[in-house]
Length: 252
Length: 110
Image 1 (tube, rainbow over the protein chains, first blue to last red):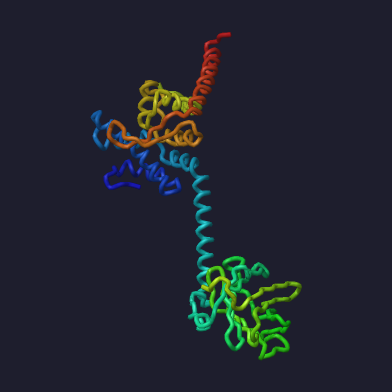
Image 2 (cartoon, rainbow over the protein chains, first blue to last red):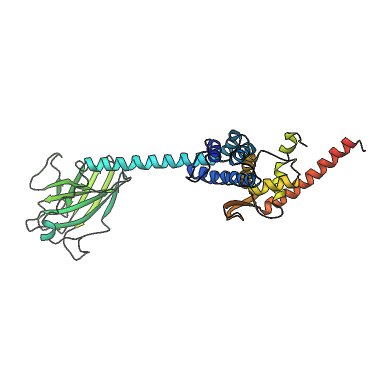
């Protein structure tokens, strides 16, 4: 706490007393007050004719036991300061751990790598349906874009918002299928009785801090105007109707 | 004349609040004023004043502010709050009752 111009004898008393007190800012304030007091006493004693050495000795003696003063001051401030410091440390550690976890998870999973957009989105008509949203196990699924090419293959992007930033990426490789207007079913390759001519594939594209993006392809839709992306397993149901074409909101 | 320290200990709050009754003061000023008014009878260890001041401030009986003293140095001035003034009048009442009773016993009055 001592400043360059401070008297070393006086500041030594203050520093010794303040070793009991926690908190740099509080110690600084108390030091200034105690040192100021001793400085005034020293000045008065020297003005009364005492030598500096004598005045220093009497000033320190007049202050009394630094242990007593220090302990009493620490007793006044300890509870609040320790609580504040303790809570601040916990908040800091938890925040640091969360950040480290998020950085680690996304870094290792290549989440920061955003691949180049597929050419189909610039070549074909893309349509966004903001209300095309459903929930499954806390995950929110939204078809953000959909389009179909001349060969009857539909493409769509599926954004999956995680319930918490550190939740695992949703596994979309099982349980999903597509049904078209005529009741035809399009399944993923890992499902039973898979038909190459009418098939669905969903693959992960990249992850953001709160959501993951997947790209899906439905082969063999023909000129169907819409299809339903469905999930059905263990009593859990999900239906997302995806219209192809039309004049709804333009894509991003 | 030196007096028993324990007699002062129970009265320090009353003494400090009384010193601030006439206006704001900083620590050294209070000690000097205490010496002067008590004719050096209440010469308490100066370092013990500050824990007392800080605990009174924490209780809301006094408040502090930094100001430049006559010496040109910055000092922490303390002043009475409304709550402190009420506590002072209570303490003065207690002290008068106590000293009257002690006096009566010591002098052997009925």
